[in-house]
Image 1 (tube, one colour):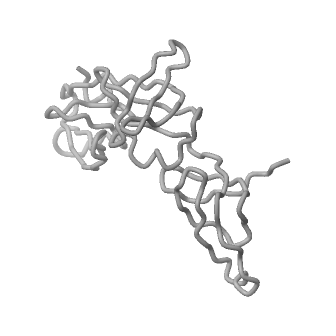
Image 2 (image 1 turned 90 degrees about the horizontal axis):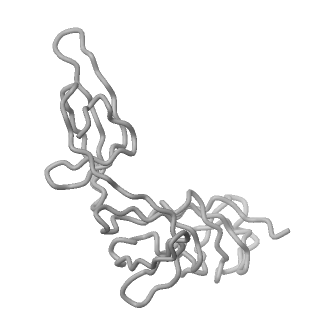
Length: 188
């Protein structure tokens, strides 16, 4: 149990049997009436975002979420298998829990697996990942004036939009949260 005065970004609350992560909070003390805390909460499982207001000083139930860095090993067809580098324990995580992160994970890549009561909640990738372009059509000479983009298939099978000057075999930096191209990686 914690007080609403103890809220901070990233704290996970257990409200009505569901886990909610605090995305944003603001302590408000109006000139008239009691103080309150306005929060933006994100459901850990579904990703739904809601605004909720608490009276100041009210007790809220916090959840103990274990965020552990793990190594992605392989996909066995039904689950994605991760290994704890400290204990060498292997954990199978369902594809529904991994979600879109699977599009940007390579074998032996480091990810964060969040668990509550030994149940995996979500898989968190780094802010950017470096992947090779498996296939993209060559840019046409006349297309360069607008700085347009073209589709490219990455080595994981994900498809993103890249600038026209990139070719098959180039290594690119991608934001795994939204699949946005961030830049080309130098091979030197």
